[in-house]
Each structure stands twice: as C-alpha cells, then as structure tokens.
Amino acid sequence: MEKKIIETAAAPGAIGPYSQGWVVGDLVFTSGQIPVDPATGAIPEGITAQAERSCKNVIAVLAAGGAQAADVVKTTCFLADMADFAAFNEVYAAYFPSKPARSCVAVKTLPKNVLCEIEAIAAK
Image (cartoon, rainbow, N blue to C red; front, side, top):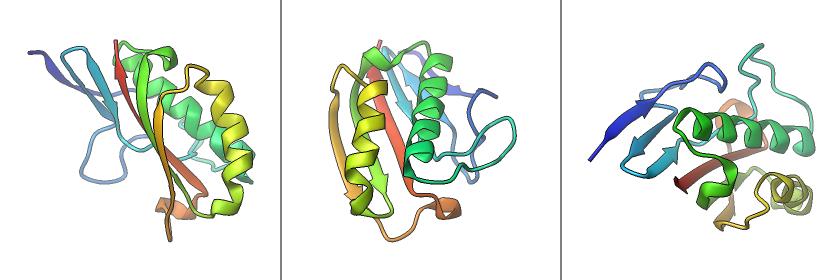
C-alpha cells in the first residue's frame, strides 16, 4: 500500500513535529489547517476570513495529495468560540458542498490564538 507524506508550499508548513498530511492508499489525511496565509504568514481578522483561509489551506493539502474537496468524506472542525458556529458554517458550506461527515467542537485555545482549525479525510 502506498504511503507518502504530503508537502506543499501552497499551505502553511507544520509548526511542530508533524506533516501537512499523508496519502495512504486511496485516502488523504490532512493535519489541522489554521488560517495562516502560506505566502505571507499573516492571519486574517474575524471568523469569516479565518474560516475561508483554513478551507483554502485544507484544499491545498488535499490537492497536493491528489484529492479535491468533493473527495472529502470526513472533517473535524475546531472553533475557539461556539458563537462563531453559524458564520463558520456559511463559509464551510461553500467549500464542502458535498456535505462530508463532520465533527465540530469548541476548544479553549488554538495555535497562534486563531479562531478555527479544520482537518479532513478524503477518499480519492
């Protein structure tokens, strides 16, 4: 079974001892993607802009692994504040219209004090 680490400059690099993702056979696993612009390192303001940047980063890692948003079968989403749930969902729905299975939880703190993080599993 094919196993390879995903590395792409189109998404932020790992900020710890992990990879951006893995391809295992026909599955693509992304690490959690926070809303860091890979070109500038900047983090946009507000949940809408951060959700959009996180979605773009997930899709970039998926693409580097040979998958696309429509291939996603499961996501896990982390919010710093569940009050952002509706605004987050509005952005998320535009990027994942195939409605993958999903868990969404509020957490105390995310890396770099961002408002959201998204990880995905895709079957290509």
